[in-house]
Structures are given as C-alpha cells and as structure tokens.
Image (cartoon, rainbow, N blue to C red; front, side, top):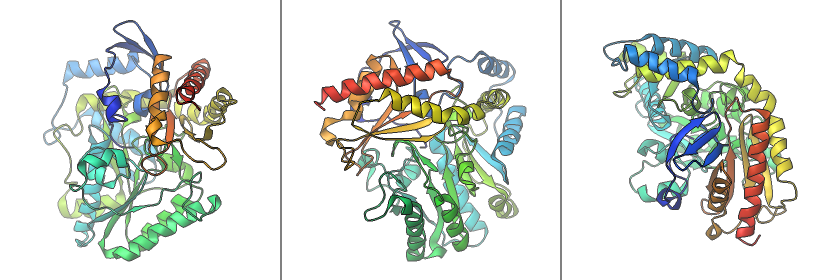
Length: 446
C-alpha cells in the first residue's frame, strides 16, 4: 500500500484522543491512557517510538543543516542511504529517487517508467495495468491504479483509466478457478490484457507483492511473481513492485519480492524505510531503466522540493543501520510463523476467523460470517470499524479495513508490530486482539 488515508469517513470524522508521547510499542495520550501499537500505525513504525539513537541522529543532522536542496548539493546521509538501500535490494536496483512518502514514490515510479520508454523512442507505451483490491496511494496517479472502491468514489471521473485484473488471492480465487491454479490464472490474465491492449501501448504492470490495506495482507500465490516477470519481459513491459507497505523488512526479507525469487524493474518503498521518524520514501530502479534515461535525459525527470531531504535521509540511515546491525529482518523472518500461531491461539473458539495469512510481521486476519462458504458479514454491520473501536478501548492499535471481497463487503484486520517487539509484547497484542474481536462480534449479534 502506498500512502495513507483514514480507514473510512466515519473514522476520520471521529473525535480522536491527543497524543502526548510514545516509547517502544506504547503510546500515551494527554489523558494518560496507553495504547499498544500492534500495527505500527499503518505498518510504519518498524522500530517503535522514541528510539533514542534515531532521534539523536536527526538532532545531530539538524545541528549541521536540515536540508540541502537536491539541485545544489548532495550530502553524506543521501549518499549513505543510497548505498545502503542499493546493497539491501541486491541485483542492479541501485538508482533511486528519495521522496516524502509512499504516494510520491508511486508517482515517481510511474514517471520513471514513462521516461524510460520515451528515451527508447517508444512513446506509444503510455498505459498501465494494475489489479483490483490494491492500494497504491492517495495522489491522483496512484489512486487511478488502485482497486479500492471506498477510497476512489469521490474522485471517479477525474482518474486516468487503468485496466485492473483479478486479485491474486488464493483464499478467494477468481470464479471457477481452483486455489492452486490462482497464480497461473492471474498471470495469464495479465498476458491476455497486454495482448488485448497491444504490447506497444503498455508501459508497466504495477502490483503489491503482498497486498496491504485493500486485501488485508494477501501474499502472491506460489509462482505468480515469476510468471509475471516472464510475461513482462516477453512484451517489453516494465514490472513495478509497490513495496511501500510490505517492504523494507516487513515480510522477513528486505524486499518482499525476495521471497518469490524475483527482481522488479522499479520498486517503491516508504513506511519502514524511515520508520516514521521523518517522512521518507523512495522509487528504486534497475540499471536497465537507468541506462536509457541517463543516456538521453541525463537523469530522472521526477522529484520534488524535498527530494533527498537531508534530515529525512539521516533518519533513514539511522533506522536502517539499527535494523541491519541488530539483525531485525532475520528476527522478523524467524518469529513470523510463531506470531501467526500466537494469533491463531488467541482466536481459539471464534468460528468467524476465516483466514490468517501473511509473511513475517505483516499478518492479515479475514473475518467471515460463514467459514465454510467464506461469506462475509453484511457491509452495513461495519464489523471492521467495531473491531477497531473495541481494540482501541482495550488499549490496542490495529489496522482494520472493509470491502476486501467485492469492494463493499468483507472485513480484515492487519497487525504489523515493530521488528523489535518482544515475545511478551507479541503475546499481549494477540490477547488484546482476541478479546476485541469477541466483543465486536457480540456487538453485531454474531
């Protein structure tokens, strides 16, 4: 998921408590109430809150200079973050445009794709393809890609037309498709759509390797990413992986697609890149994309006033140093399955838990009215909002979302704790969520 937006208008309109301070997983409001941050906000706070080492790095940078404008200066934080991220990505993903968040990162990725084709003399390649039940951001270009009905409705008619394919979701495969055939079927949909549009007109396919907000954490089916890599290569279409929510270590590998053994041409990161200490995101691109852009235009024609913001890059360097030094990506990978089981244990006896899925510390829970048929609760029950409310009252922050089945019905919950959460904290997150889910189900008479 790229970019952030309130889960619904009713949540946005609610009277919210005022935050006072935070330390680790615990947030405290001005009334002294405490909340365990079980979702890292919207899967952002990979080191929790109030990390003194990160805070000191930001203060030290501010004492020197807050921001050296990118057209006038480079900087040590910018250069170190570029080197560090390139090394963590691997392959030839070593060029990047740093921006202020996920939506800007996606916009930059789209512009890089268009510029790449333009520099190769293929100006007809102007179209993008994405998927339903996806979320790529809240700017108009990113929103046009997104298959998230609730968040698109107010802007329909002003969005660029983007064909959207079936979600690649093994728990809810396309009609008539067996779960084990989901990856193959959905990859074939992509090739069919490219051929229908004409390969000469398609710039890129954009997808989340692990779908976040729109689907409630849906990992790519086995073999899917490899198939779409082959299809994109066959037709000269760029492959853009939106890892704003699922990347930067969240899934137990620094790149989410590393799990699938695939490199994209362009990828986006944000959230866990700077851990929420300062706004930071990046569009990262491979040598293949950079070569014609550098040869013809001398560099990427995208960026903003605060691209490569010096203090923001210093925050990113500090976060990534800690993540690497303390082996936190490996910890997420090692603890992920146990955490999933801890959640399952906490939901024991709740017949409405349909699916618990995800990778690492990026876990989604889908709630259904009937486990056998996978029928969701009626949308007018707004169960996901009731779960959020009950959890908040119980001192737990989680990330629920609605509409994952058909854009209207379907309730999911995302938990995404910091990478350095202790075993006891993970157990407490699960316990509070189990209690909250039982209460919310009772609220609707289930």
